[in-house]
Image (cartoon, rainbow, N blue to C red):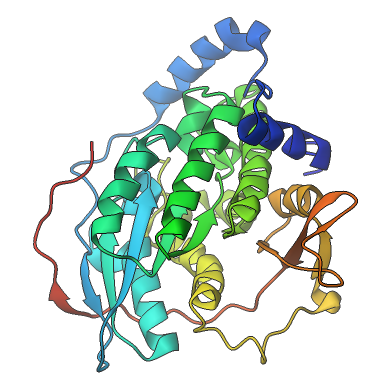
Length: 341
């Protein structure tokens, strides 16, 4: 959807987060009174889910060798709220996919929790470092938008979390803020506004993630058309969280980037391809493009041996081919551990 986010907006929010300054508000201050009433109506329309997400932690893959340590951080979507089987959670789907592609066992540790905002990432990262992770996935941002957290604050907290994991030697992939405009119970004009806020936050997150040495996958445009086309299939019974089919769609989009981050993806067989839209751009331009285009990964790159050009950090925008997801199969289960609060 054109006009919802621009490179200038993404750069402005990210600069406010990383270099000081207020950035811009998620929604205009003058709209809060009306939108509060709309939000109350939407909350009454959204259903309730019994219980929490299923525990999917354990070792995946029938292979020999030391398991790869994979941690999942973030909110309820990262934890898999909305499904009943551990095999249907994004963590299980991705752990099984990594094991298959790398022909190596993968130990999944899920530290994400329902209701988490970017302010909760610091505690999750502290818990994650105990696991000595080699690769991590962060899914965050939706609750920041619904709670009207200033984008610059959200992005700064995400930047700090990514840098802490990178400093610990962990490869990091961030699934950026989903498109909340796909949620049917949210009425207009609130739906348009949260879509705009979601896209702006996703683009700014991408700028920060690349600056911190990680890579991003844009989930908003990936999930948007599929979820809008078949909401009864892609959403859980609460009409807010993804269903098993919805999590499978998200995991299929994330897996190539996650596998590439740990060297499990055949880069020589899937190089950047201009014919499918892959191109090198300044990071703010790539972030704005990814926020509105389906299947986009953004990672840092060089041009002529330089990380930066006249318009800032260079970034590779690409659309990786997807790999079929294998059936998750746990070799063992991890004992219950305290969740970060």
